[in-house]
Image (cartoon, rainbow, N blue to C red; front, side, top):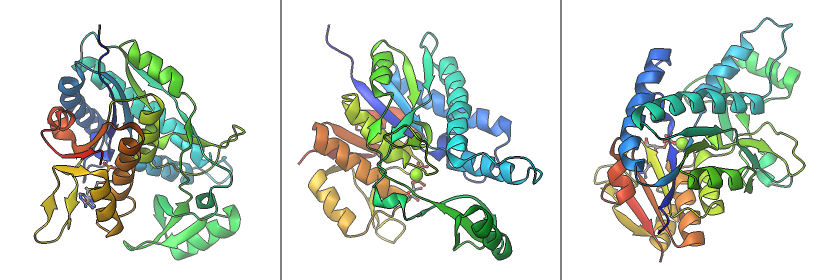
Length: 307
Ligand code: ADP
Ligand code: MG
């Protein structure tokens, strides 16, 4: 019997929380259920691993830690990431099992190895958590050694390093579960970052890059990145913007060098797609969560092909 196609599907933040939502539990369930209904149709005939972001949820936890009385301990960022894997994993698990009767959904807390000598570990670049006043920011820098930066939207935010993922520790078991027919939820929030020694680090790994690494590690046929726009655009947000339906790796690399894909949003998705297609000769698909079936089939969104 020929093997079923194996796909890794990365869900953006909009799968759990839409822009403008506050995060009330009813909103989380409603949004996750809508995402699950869209995925159920798309994933009914394939083996699949679902990954997800965690930005708003990590921000919420850090804010909650901050509002504890001063004598209560603050938990580190890597634990907040671990907590969001359980939180989001459970909500997606429940919603997906409801939408796909008979399909077992398994959540795997996932660790991702980063290199101690990764230069990114020394230069924090990724803003996380709540906004602070200048006085609070100075106090946090002194007391906790945090790196704070003024945010264009006003106030100060903590910056944390965003190192490159080099290994997904649980990849072998994730593949086994997926090949046995379970729908696996893994590498949430880019994974819990650890060093080669196993020591956890306070950093955030990009979820699109971690998903691409996982997809390569398990021999996936397709990497599918679902987000809140119809695909990859050239000249995004400007008059005359053009959506790409099919693009080769070399064309996409050229457009990336021209600066069409900003870091922190479309940039990592494009890099994740390039790395996957170059390494495997498979295709990477970027498109809207609401059209998951068509994006996986390649009839909606952007397909990145070898060449
Ligand atoms: P996710 O939570 O799915 O990772 P992101 O906000 O990180 O979502 O990335 C998706 C966003 O990227 C879109 O909402 C869009 O505003 C932005 N974006 C930036 N440049 C582009 C581009 N060239 N084409 C499409 N979207 C782009
Ligand atoms: Mg993102």
